[in-house]
Image: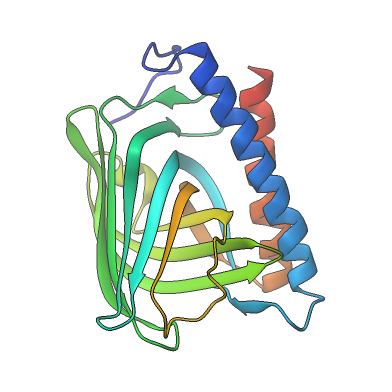
Amino acid sequence: MHYNSAPSKAWSAGESSKMNRTKGNIILAWLGGLALLCLTAGAQAAPLNLVTSWPDIQANDLDVSYTAATGSLSVQPSVTLLMDYSQDGTAFTAISNPGLSLSATVDASGSLSGGSFSISGDGTTLLSGTLLDFGYATLEGFATFEFLLNVDGGTLASDYGSRAGMILGGLAQGFSGDFSQDFAINGMMGDTKMVVPVPAALWLFGSGLLGLVGVMRRSAG
């Protein structure tokens, strides 16, 4: 399934503008925070070091919750979920009736033992599969979660191939990298892209710059 580049009526101009501004601010915070992460000994981090590439499903207002007693970590949309899709970064199209769910089992050390995900929209499943790995980082009040995904279904599976990555970012809201305690983070932004593992330094600049270019293109449009 391929989306065309025609503007969608699913969002109002105000909603799109608000998402662009919010996403741009958070991505800039990621860039600054992750750069400091390489230099700050006190930062909490166990990142996957993934670089992302197109295509991209972008989402806002995602809630992350974790229950330490069961090791259950989940990602669900809040009351209002907006998602859009770009195959190559040149244009984004809004996804109607969007849905996203991710469930994982993560132990007290932050290690993944299993999980699954599903992304839906336009009346069908866009991507689905299982979780292969999990990483996270926190610094200066911001948190980033990374999920390496095995794609095995959905109408966009041929665009992504067998591997994708979901990266969530936002205010840490009390999460400090400690998986021995329950936590809940509301209103995170997310990108689900095709990913290629590279050394950490390249991931720092590659993923950040690709995200920043995407936001700049959307803002310019």
